[in-house]
View: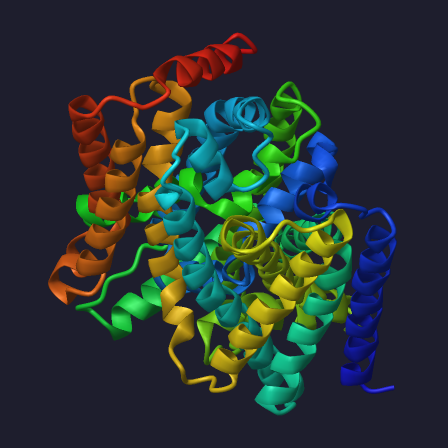
Length: 500
């Protein structure tokens, strides 16, 4: 058999495994709570690995190693910021949000929590946040489908549209039938696959190069050769500080602020069996994140030394992880590493499909539509997943549609619009519905303006000014307005606090 045949067999086994898990989860889903939150019965290990896998898309296995390969460890500040942000999210948000969403009328989505937390009878908070989620995540899902098409085109020479539809079809199938549980269980397998690939590849390279000392020497030799040929473009890839200004480092690390407002991540906190499980979830999740981030960083860095010492060329730095796995391993094992890249893409898409479906059905349709039976609610949830997937696929038909550029923008938008409001909701009694709504709008607007002015975007990542604007506006407006139903709000806040 050819190398490509072995790799296709590995990919096929991976696809069948994902579909099998979705089939199993289908029979565990009986009502909308099950479909959207797995009945709030998610063990901490599943919640942690699911949150991590749904967070880390193909950027982890391709974008980050490629950035490290090109510029060195200074690009690792994004990974450092994300890891710190994820830790703080698990430490401070997870336990309180799990408790508060149950205390506040058993809220199963982020928009419904907003409405119930502030007793917002106007429903503006729920509708506004539902629309924001639906619009941004439709493009986010589409970007994942584009990545799937490009992956198959680059790896196997297939037509872009075939690869895009294949990835979209398999992901849609197990998400459509398995719901949140199906997405979470597949995330666990995908997370473990990503972990294995990102640990094994750099370790094998170092062993093959003669150990850490020889590897570092090879990296320094590659830098010296580059600097000799390009005296105006000096590189020190082993330095965390060289090659970036203070503002650039702060901007990169500020990606961690986005965690507090990502609906597809914080929904995992809401699905935990209890708030006490957040502690175990934090340890598992952050342990996984440290290992995969370090693996991605070292793969890019070690790849510099490997390609220089062997005289091989690398046309596209973002393929460093894929090429190293194909060089080092049997084609069947290399195929499993390719499957890890697909896992990173598909785990993110499936989680975002579920959040979009919940926004469409629970936060928009049920507000304006008639009451639905339990069976109808689950059916509508599946229709929501299908509708969003179809729209996203139509947007992804053209690989040049520039949708991938919206990923960083969407991360900043969610982080600035929802992050401060979630934190203030959990830790400040005085936050009002008007303050939350005004802050959400302010954060979104600032990100929208800042992110589209090249001079401002070059100065700093738009999440920083957007996050700051949301906090200031939410606090000021809350101090000027008094919450309605204040006694009930205070009672629920105290009930949540008493559990922590």
